[in-house]
Image (cartoon, rainbow, N blue to C red; front, side, top):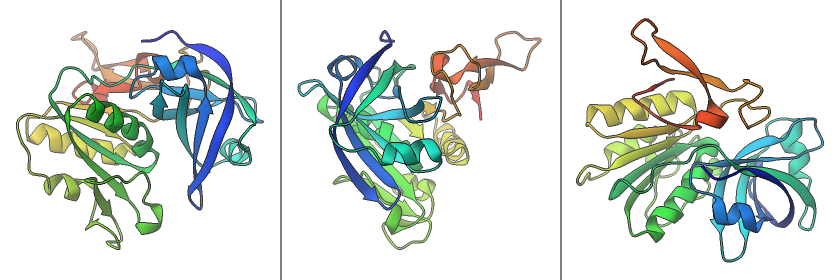
Amino acid sequence: MSMRQEYKAKIVSKEYLNEDTLFFVLECPDIAAAAVPGQFVNISCDKFLKRPFGIASADKDKGTVSVGVKIIGEGTKNLSELEAGDIVDILGPLGNGFDIESYDSYILAGGGTGVFPLNFAYETLTAMGKEVATVFGFRDRSQVIMEKDGHVITTDAGDYGIKGTVIAGLDSLELKGNPCVLVVGPTPMMRGVGEWARSLGLKCFVSTEQHMACGVGICLVCVCRVKSDNPEEEYKHVRCCKDGPVFDYEEVIL
């Protein structure tokens, strides 16, 4: 894991992807150089605590990192009001990223804001020459974001792509070899994809999305459960921000 540090970052650009979701590009060369897919950053807003966002892209040459922001509460609403040229405090890169070295091929499955960190994984893996299949699920066409050529899109409403959940999209894939599955999204979706991968004997890693405060493992707000090595204990608590957010699906209890 890279050393975390707090920086002042200038907003390079801001783009609305749909009515409540934005894409920010931030100038921060040190984080851009150190970040790996699956890590996140904490960004300041006008509230007491910074807000965590999965890194959606990193350009080492330009010294920029990108994040997606869905307006949910007061903190994200404040961030949505910022403009290019504004300065924010940014802490990162935080957490442990995906294993992008050990496998020749990958399946990326995501929903909601989970498509942002998976976009970073997609860009990195394809640049490495890995074989990548991507399935993103959304409620309906209006919510479809971060789509690239070759991505499989599913919608619950059936008004775009394959009708159904991410699982319907995964079932449409022609599997080759023994790909590793990377998942980010709502817990029920991650659990469903994890079980899909298990049924096929595929390795699966999930990135947990928990409420966070400090982002560095001190406050213990974001604890989750993983299976314990102690035969007398069914599980133990770990910190998503420090020990995750990426966990082996066979170890984490969702």
